[in-house]
Image (tube, rainbow over all chains, first blue to last red; front, side):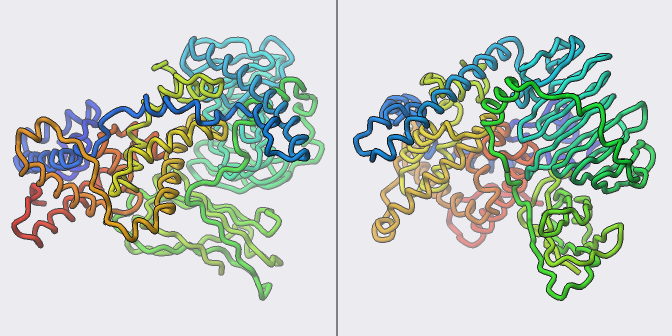
Length: 425
Length: 199
């Protein structure tokens, strides 16, 4: 039986008609036995009705649709740039600029139209997520894709669109490459199976996948049955074989974690993840090993150019994460830096605050260390600071360090009343 | 048209299909209006600003980066349009008394008589003041919920927060609103009262 405080969080959603069936049953069972909550909800319902009632006179009383549409023709439609070249107000110099611009825009319109058609036909077949990628390389009939609504895999051909939630599979002796929105790409070796949750979140079920992740303010996740890989713009290979996942980093930095622990990997390092233990400590890989199966996979040029003109052109390159904090700290005395201290003021209203990823780099954005903290530390009334230190010991010889605190929305939300600050020690 | 996703409708608009834009207006007019009302409602121009925002969205549709986040983009445009209106009319607003609200009276209210009407208007004025005491992040979801009675899902599409976050926000916001409005009752005797909950 649920307690009063448990059902308390259901009351507002109940009045708003937003409880799901099971919660509604829990609430009903509780109300049947608890007179106090029954009378409370009665008063809350009255209050709710008063609120809604007092707003009634200010509500939108008619649809704006007809009046908005009536004046649309006067609102220079965004694609009708053809009128600009003949605009008498433009100087000759501007005119020469407009002709190629208009041509480029026409070309873009045709391409957007084509993409639109492709999306419509896909949509009529089955509703799918946003289109976020395109197949740019295959070398055989064994390349397959399956959208989330479908139960079977279809052949993936060059220029096939890839949507959120789709799964990709390569059979024996077939490889495939997919260009993804936000500047990333994946190459799949033979006998590999992955799911593309979205353009920054991929699951590798089995096989070998090479990732080239574009630098973007949103972090990129790769999950495998053994653990999680958090990426900050880099190239690396994930090799999933039964229970173990081997991660090899070619460039840049990644943070690998399992339920048991985590480890930061940089250029030329390799670590093995298993579900029931911490990642193996990073080991250097011989240079020769960094030239692998993926080198021979050259993307098909027409597919890549269609991808760039359609999917890649629809998005901005850098997207700021809300409430990401960036600190640049000048190390004037050139002294050793032991680590970073996070400070906040305990706030009882901020329960459910998310955790953070901490990314510390030098002025050229070379990684110095990575770490993450859990949202639960903010619930501890006795805590107001947390001390994070690099595994390899103090940082030396840096003039400026850049600290990025990236909220981890998977673990909670940002409560505006709680501010976390970083201090260098 | 009704089953199409926002993204598909946006693509149709870009191809010049005005009916597709009409469908988007139907989907988002309530949210756009409530946002406009939050900023400029007291000057009686919420409807005009909402309309202006929808036109601005149509003109700028090409610049929409992620058609799946149309709601959040419309919210930004509406906020900007309202801010521009306030800036443009700043000097006038400083020196003039605001015009009365453009309001519609329902048959039900006419039957109940002028007392109820006055009472409701007073409650609304107090509610508006109470909303201003909420944390900034709570205010728009509250307006969308109470003014236009949007569902959590619709609110979440417009503010960009998840449905669960919206649920949490409205839970906390309604508790705070109750506290503020009931404290109000305690301080001003003889006013119409809000129903009281004993904790």
